[in-house]
Length: 192
Length: 192
DNA sequence: TTCCTTTCTTAACATACATCAACGGCAAGT
DNA sequence: ACTTGCCGTTGATGTATGTTAAGAAAGGAA
Image: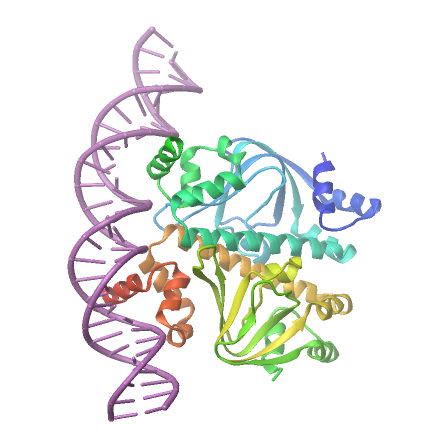
C-alpha cells in the first residue's frame, strides 16, 4: 500500500526509516468509485491526494458552464484544487473519478506538522510544485504556439496510457479543441 | 534600495530586524541596460532576480527560431530561468532587458544557506512558486479556451502598465497571435 | 531638420478550427 | 432481440487567425 508513495518521495529526498514511519502515519486511505467527486466547487479544501491506483480528471466550469479539463491524474500523480488548498479559498474545481480509484490523502494540518518535524518535506513539496510549474509552462507554450495536431501528438507521447483509458472527448477538451476536430486529426494521422 | 524587497517579503512572512539584515546581506545589486541579456541559453543559472526598477522579457526560441515570450518582469516581480535554476540544468531561456533596469540578485548557494538559517524563507519561496503556478494555470485556461480578444482584454487588465511600456508585437507574441491580428482586435475595440 | 530603420496598420487571400446536422456503432437495460 | 442513449465520425459551411505584401507612422541618428 505505501511502497509506491515511499519510492515516490525517495526520488526527491532521503528519509530515515523512522521518518518514513512518521510520514505514513499521517496519510489516510481513500477509495472512490467511478463518477464520484473527490472535490466540488465551494467546498473547503484541506486535503491533497496521491493516486495509488485509478484515474481522475480535474476540471473547471466557466460562466457558460463549459467544462475545461486542467489535469488528468493517474498512478503516481498528486491531485487537489491546489489554489484552494494553499490559499484557503473555496474550491473552484471539480475533481471527478473516471475509474474506481485508491488514493492516499494528507490533511493540511498534518502537513504543517510534518513541515515542522521533518523540514525536508517543505523541500519535497517545493520541488514538486516547481516541477508542476515547469510542465505547466511547457503546456502554455504548446497551447499558444502549436496547432492541434502537434498538441495531440505531444499528449500521446506524454500520456500513452491515459489515451486508452479516457474518452476521446475528454482528450479533445484537455487539448482545447472539439471532438470533431480531434476525430479529423486522428483520421489524417492514420492515413499517413 | 532595499525597502521594496523587504515590503515584498513581509507580505508573506514575518521577519525580525536581524533576519532582515541577514537577508539583505546576501542580496547583490545588478544594473543592466536596455537590449542586454540577463540570461542566455546554455549558461549555468545560479541566480534569481527581483526587479527593483525596469522591465525585462523572458523568452524561449524553438527549433525554428521562433520567439515565445513566457513572462514580462517589471517592478516587484522575480525573474530567472527557474527550471534551470532549480534543476541545475543549462538555461533554455533568454532574459532580455527592455528598459534600463535595477535588479537584486540572490545566489543559489546563499539561498541554500538562508534556508538553513531562516527556515521561513523555504516557506516564502514555496508560496511564491505556488502563486506563480496558480497564475500559470489560469493562463492555460485562457490560452486554451478563450479567443484572442478576450485574452487581450485580460492582459490589459492584468498589466495596465506593461501595455504602454512594451512594443505591440511583444504583446502579440505573449498572447500567441500575430501583430496583424492584434492590430485588428484593437481596431474593433476602439470602434465599439 | 532629414534620412533611415523599426513598428504599426490595412487589405487580399489561404487555412485551421468551430459549428451544425446527420448517421452509425456499441453497450446497457428492458 | 429490441430499444435507448452515448460517443465517434463525416460533410457542408462559417469565422477567426495566419500569410504575404505594401504603405503609413513613429522614433533614432546624423
